[in-house]
Length: 165
Length: 103
Image (cartoon, rainbow over all chains, first blue to last red; front, side):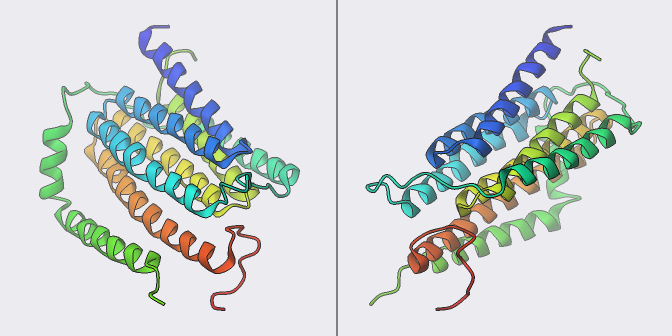
């Protein structure tokens, strides 16, 4: 067992424990903050897999963007002054049984399948090849995603706008 | 068993995906459902990057993960705008109580 394995198990434990706390926490603000640890753990997993750029993007977009958005959503849609920030759950036991069976099937699939595995050499950085591929082979998707972000921006602003009365 | 390989990452992502699904199924608050979706997207991304790593560093997997992150950001913005509107109309965000599109 070398350092790589130990660090992997640490990050995996962080992701799974905080992910479990996200879906079981009674207080929705606590759930949002546990989500922070999950995202950091996943960023660590990306770094372990040699995807340095994806790891940084994960921290910048998920932790810096999506989590802040979610926290804003929590704060704006709960009656903070009335201490009604708790959130209910429905049908926990049947859901746990069904999801348990589903997780077992998924695990069996992942473990039993003989995946093609060719580790290769870890490159120094993935950034140049990512950039080159993005503006040659995937340039159409790149431009379409830019359009999509613009449309999402305008759409979100117009949906959330308050009507003048 | 103890040496980390592709299977370890796949198992981790399978667990994370199941946790996200559990969150979506059992929670009533729309924002908690959104958090479950984010967990599932992260699980899928771990798979993409892991297959990229163990497929002799094919860059396609990492690009797919990048596109998923971008789509997740757009999705979160739109979903929260909709949730804010629902809150304005119904005064709560329980997905069980929301059953009409227009007043």
